[in-house]
Length: 283
Ligand SMILES: [Fe+2]
Image 1 (cartoon, protein in one colour):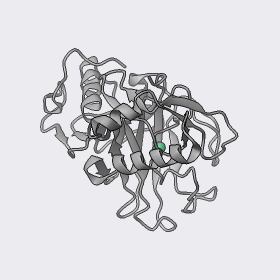
Image 2 (tube, protein in one colour; image 1 turned 120 degrees about the horizontal axis):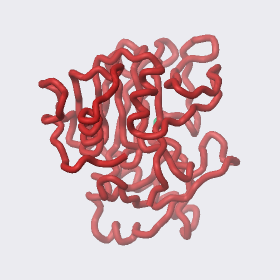
Image 3 (cartoon, rainbow, N blue to C red; image 1 turned 180 degrees about the vertical axis):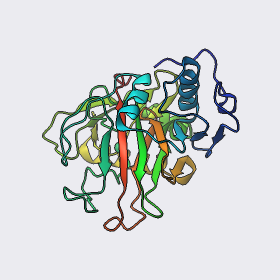
């Protein structure tokens, strides 16, 4: 992904009708209306979306009606879209967004809380050598209320650290391993990563982190927990309250996110279509 030549204010996004865009919180998020993502994206609109993502980290497109293939095609504007693994009745497929839900194999709502559950603050797949650049979800079925997604801005969190803490963190590396199966291979990444498109520094932490290289286990765990508590305080968080048809895309390189079980999870269906765009090695 390359940034356009000049940083654009989301209010001036070219080719998108006004009132088109609005900032959603001090921690991030911007709403872009008046664009139909089912149609091919013009180069101008694509640059505007990229600019909005880089400036606001979370981009909300309300009122979208996308087939899974159309969502995949939209995601492909921003890089190589990952195929998804075979689980929960889904076979491995290319070319379509995959289905993320609170349903079991019989289509019944269930509550799955585990160490790997997306109710924990995390960035997507940090245990990969080159974790995803962005993820997008399209709200297909929602509970009557709740089922929010929260996003924590790790660049703001880093900026807010005292200089001494920044010095202490410089050069540290975090080991990540899949929380759903710690026997699988993991990856080691900088605790403070530099965004490849904006040059901004941010923390790189969250679920699946298992320790800090060179620190005793307890000290590493304590540092990661302290940083997580710092990064997820309300001033750094944008809460997205879903409406049917929302497509939300976010920058995995500078955010944590989590699903919030603030609805009757075992009673109401919550179905999202998900696409993930491959990223680069964090540095
Ligand atoms: Fe996630």
